[in-house]
Image (tube, rainbow, N blue to C red):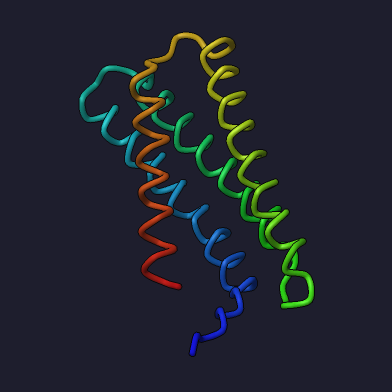
Length: 131
């Protein structure tokens, strides 16, 4: 006999996503502090922060699209929202990287990508640990 799927924890997921804004702020403060200590200006902090912010914005977009509906009666709408959220997230990520690299000068591209990946890993750890 199979077990029914657990109901998603919509309110908990939204709360965790909002709490991650503090993690974003912490990463930005750490990046600024490292740049101040090293004494190379704020170029590295700006680059890293752009990646962190891009990751947070796109993940928030996915969260708010994908977890709009709950319940067994709307299971098809839930799956549609998951797919839609994922597509919007990747489209926003690609457009975000393009806009950052085109309009924000000077910037260190490697640190933008590192900031994005660091925030993705942070998101995975937070969601895995608290759900």
